[in-house]
Amino acid sequence: MTGRAGLRESTIDLGNHHKSLKKLFQAAGIPPWLRDFIPMCELDVELVAVGDWCISVKLKSWLNENGFSVCWRPNHPLLEYIRELQFS
Image 1 (cartoon, rainbow, N blue to C red):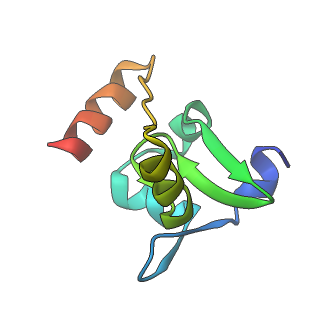
Image 2: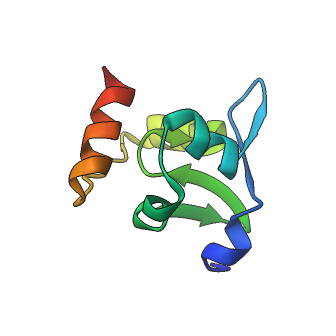
């Protein structure tokens, strides 16, 4: 893991396109001061998950093949609200 600073400029492969971490957070309406509260998963220096709402095709495929899922429950009320909006 490279730490948060190394991931700030990362992109995630969403299949038909790649999206930067900054653009993902902006699209989800997550303010900069809350972004450090969101877990990120890296595999072989590749960003593969941001919370449980943005998962790369590579990780999603592996999860499906092995019967696993990713589930994250934010402990900040605003993040919980934003996450609920994403899934509704």
